[in-house]
Length: 188
Image (cartoon, rainbow, N blue to C red; front, side, top):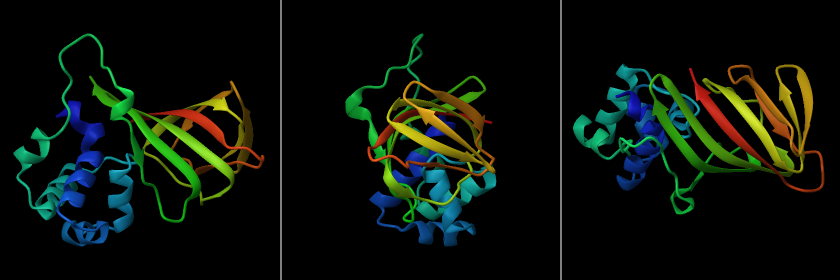
């Protein structure tokens, strides 16, 4: 099952939407919060096995069917992601000016990781968030201040930062142009 951990959230969202169910309906059925379902769907956290099984039951699919629809590693010495396979990640409703594009995510041995392109618009707004992952950010263009805990670090094009995502954090774009960064989450 290790090969599937990172894609679980995407699969839950896919089945939920196909079945016309809301995040809240899944949360009630699985006896968890809507916020947890949202974090799972968006790759911010991975559910425990009991919670995952409750979610699958609430989605009204068989466990086998749930996992059969997940992408599999092809047994090669590499994993390839094509541009046309990229998808936009919907984040919290209260996040304004943030655009996430899902690029890559796999579980290799015991290391799960996911890579996204994050665009932060000038004047973007969102509260601090936490992620069950270590985060590596590389600034492709523009600049962004990153608040991690109580510290603020200014990142400019070409800069990178690595930190424990369990510490509340948020990027803030104080400039007049959008910033773009490559983000890799290393799940723990």
